Length: 315
Image (cartoon, rainbow, N blue to C red; front, side, top):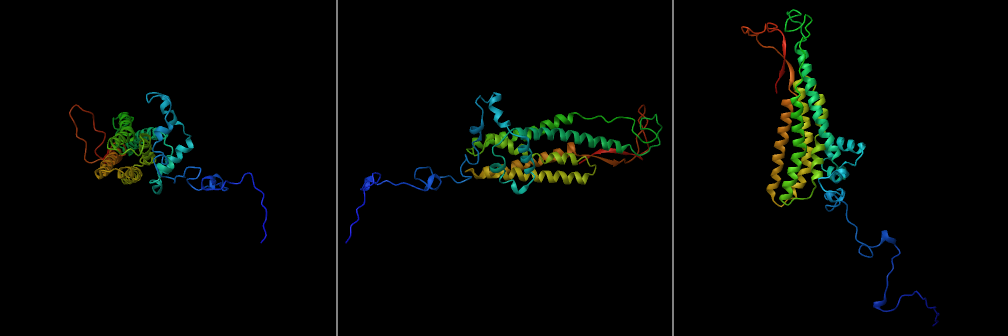
């Protein structure tokens, strides 16, 4: 039997269970979980991964009554805002909008989306009403150029008066639904113990969710009632699906199953908003005048004998 002498290595490990030492040659990335590092977390698990704690992550250094507190929520580029806007028009991406596209949330996009919608509603309604007013008097009438009804070529001698009250109505409706409703919903859910999203995310979902109404408001200038009804129905369905896909998972996480019934209340509010938009802003079109004018003693002379048309404002 042959024996081979092995020189002792100064760095050899000591014998005995207490002196055993282990060294990994796999590096930091290949080390087994629990040995020298914290185990990795799976993506999308927990409130921090989904940025539900965005208020604590992005809020400024000042108090909530200062501008510095809200400044981080307006620190976003225009390209990102536009991408978040048109993504709301893709129904298959609605369920992952919070965790994927609205990450981190902002207030700049929702604010300008709602503000643009206010002016789009007023301008489209005013333009549609003026077009209906012009078409109502476009046919030649037997009146003289000096008569109150119009000129000899059928052009109306009175200008259309824009109703600026619709601007204040649009401002109240849009901001009440786009900002007040999500804030109240968030506060109610926090009171019920459902706090898996922030108030900024709630406002972001509602604000970006109204983007579809902007192109619809422009297209509703078309003086065809059935087309306007179809456009309103499309906007109602797309925005409702987007909001529901992002809100229902939050409501479903509540322990009280009755909390899920809030989705019915939100659906009723959304339906009421769509009908209000249709009645107040998208209801101008030209209808044939029925019957003749009634002569009132001491009043103005009727402009015609029932052959013209008038601007209608119906459902």
